[in-house]
Image (cartoon, rainbow, N blue to C red; front, top):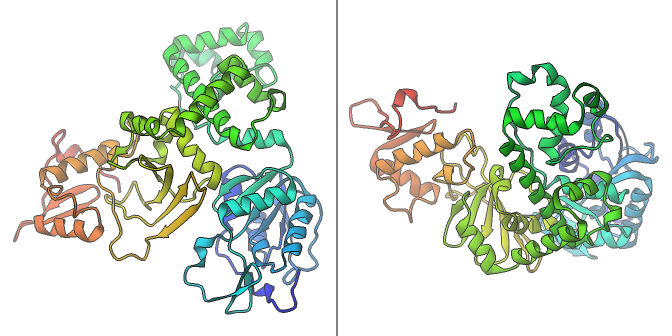
Length: 501
């Protein structure tokens, strides 16, 4: 794995934190405490040290920095930013195949993308570039990398994020993971005192109902036998729960879970939707319990997918959405409210995730109304900063399947957000805090010239002109010779308003 002219060992860098592929795998539950990990091309071994500190069994091999490391079959194999430094295409392919042969359950593949070319001093070499330090780099397009992995391994990969892909050994495990991405975390009411007698027994059942929207079979919860003994049956246990917490709660959860399932089935069309018999056991039960038959469910999913490709339907759904900030060209929504969108818009956004995976750090999603495009926007400290500045954007063109990245972190005048309450759902814990700030800003006339306040410099100019400063989501009016004072909210006194630290 070492070329004659290429100094591959120089590409290994020391990291102060986990590499992005390992970080994503931990976030997604791909790597757990019971897994063993092989880091193929581990460089200086920084990921190994940090995984070991988490109690995860791991080993590594690197041709330059750890040539004596073991390359043995492992539950999970990570080949992180290795294939992009190999200048020989045939060797690149063989390395990927070797890693796949060692992966008992899962292979994590990552490579650098074309937007990382910016600022580099490079010379063309083969199908990539030579750097000024004598190393080779091939910069991939997201779709190009996906197609190459799939063609070499003969297995359909799943995008985890830009430049990072998961390859599952078990097709059932793949479908379970993909389906879980469209099953948001649900909340439920706290058990009332009437449950005290059976509280410990009913809690696992309520957790299952909240997650799946249907009753479990005996194989899905350990307490099934005990529930039958003490309560009579799982159905009777559910009637007790529904009576105490309200049947409408569970009807809503059931409907939401059915929508989650339709979103998954619609997007599964892109990766050759599996036959019903090939679905994992839990998903088969979900279909039967929530959508009657697989044939009917697939027909509904196909209709939704078709609708998500219709510009007029998407535009109408954006205009009718009860969550998100609507502009003439797009609907903007905070990631926390994504599950509140209508299924057609969730599928529209999901089509972009089929291409790019989960975009780390993106917390505002822009659903374009005038073109088949979804953008993922990074606004650091969205909750804490009254008017956060845009740090980066990643645009997914659903027609060309191209990905474009733009950096704003070094911009002297980046775009900023106003009216943050419009981006979040009604249940967001800080929604009223955001809305209270907006009311104060409106009362002070700060939005009187909206075309100038969309960027940082324009906003600072508006604040200066009105002699206003903002602290902790509160407007402070500065009068000459006087202390700053805060105008009272239209709904509550200044003393009672909540302001986050």
